[in-house]
Image (tube, rainbow, N blue to C red; front, side, top):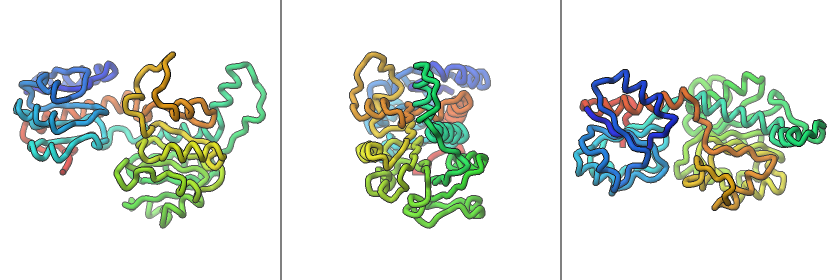
Length: 331
C-alpha cells in the first residue's frame, strides 16, 4: 500500500515519522506543495493521498488524480470549504477530514487572547519594553465580573465555556443546534440579538458556512454593549473587517482578538519582515494596541499536529482497504 501526502511541513515530520514507524507496511512519500492538476502526477502509484492546503481542491486536480486511479483523499484539517465536492462526486472520490484534533488547543488559545484583551497586556508589554513601568492608564477588567457570550457550542465552544466557568464568569450561549448538556445548564439564550445585548465579550466558534458569513457587521455590532470585546479564532469570513475597524475607531468595540482574517490566504504563515503587506487593513489592525492579531495559530500545538497526521493517515489506509473510516465525509 502507498500513500502520497501533499503540503507536508517541517513541523509535521516528527509526527509523520512516528506514524510510519507504527505502520511499516505502508509506503509513504510526500511533497511540500499543494495538490493541483499539475502536481497530481507526483502521487502516481498511490492508493490514497493526504493533503493540507489553503488553495482549492479543483475539478482539474480531481480529474488528474482520477486518471491515475486515485480515488481517496484525506485532508489533515477540519475545514472543507476549499473542496469542490461536486467534482469529487463526479470522479467518485472518498474524502475524510479531521473534525476533532484538539478542541482544547483552540479553546485555550481563544480564552488566553480574551484574557489578554481584558487585562490589556499588549499596551502594557509595549510600555515595559520601553522601560515605562507606570501602572496607569493601562487598567484591566476581571474575567469573573464579565458576562461572556459564546456563539457556537460544538467541541471548541463547549471547551471555551468550561474555561470561562473556571474563572467564575457568567456565560451565555447561542447555537442553532443546541447541545443537551449546555441546555441542561440553562446557558442558552433564544437569539443572537439577546446574546449581543447581554455580553461584555463575545467569542465565535461557528463554521464559515454561507449563512454565517459577515455575521459580525455594523448591524450586529450596533446591538452589542458599548466597549464589547470580540474574539474570533474560527473563520475569517465571520467578520466584516471594514465594519469592525469602524467600531474600533468609534470605541463601540474596545478590543478584539483575531486569529483568523477574511483575507488571510496568501498572507498568513509567511515571513513579511521588512516587507510591505499587500493588505492595508491588516497592517492597520496589527499596529493597534487594542487588537490582538495572530496568524491562524490557535490550533498549533504538538498534540494537534500529531492528531492531524495520525487521523488523516489512518483514514487514508482505511479508504485504501475499501473500508469507511469514522471521519469519512458524507456528500
